[in-house]
Length: 184
Ligand SMILES: CC(C)(COP(=O)(O)OP(=O)(O)OC[C@H]1O[C@@H](n2cnc3c(N)ncnc32)[C@H](O)[C@@H]1OP(=O)(O)O)[C@@H](O)C(=O)NCCC(=O)NCCS
Image 1 (spheres, rainbow, N blue to C red):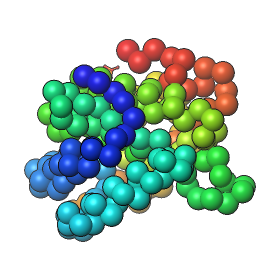
Image 2: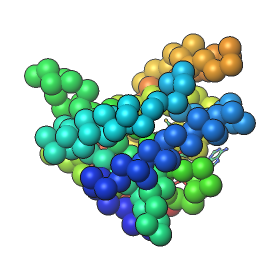
Image 3: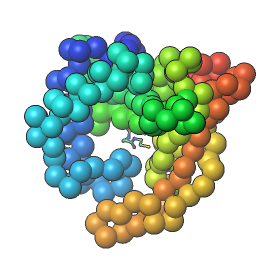
């Protein structure tokens, strides 16, 4: 498996992994990622990807992808929250591994790679995670994320609320994130 920065050719692979979530959620209501009310069209995805790729080129985003046998099997994205002077150095993180490839260390490796490449771009990284998403919380904590609050009604699926936990990592602290830590 190769972990590398996003490339323009990754559109189809990333889209395939993302759109599969809409199939997965039909049988897995505990899927720990929020989705649109209905699957986006291919045109919507193309606009999203072009915007994301432009953000990478402009140094407003870091995206690491995991590729196995030529197929994209996961991604980790850190995007600048906004362009305001006071909040410019804060990035928001998202992580996704393809169904069938989870539990094999892909998410951990993506996280380490993306955070290492955040150096010089972001000083603080924030994320939200469903409280019951234990695999995600485990790897976030391992690379140095800390919880700083929770919204009891932060995520509703099928009429049932779940708690949403906020986490952050200070990338300016020596050893404060994954780049210097072991992942297993
Ligand atoms: C969350 C996600 C990215 C993790 O990726 P992954 O490749 O499965 O993660 P890894 O294999 O690197 O690590 C998973 C860890 O969770 C642990 N784990 C698995 N099930 C667990 C459970 N029920 N309780 C506690 N830990 C658990 C694994 O043992 C492993 O830890 P270890 O390396 O110490 O053994 C992946 O499951 C995913 O894409 N889920 C759907 C989307 C999602 O939830 N994204 C995150 C949104 S915040």
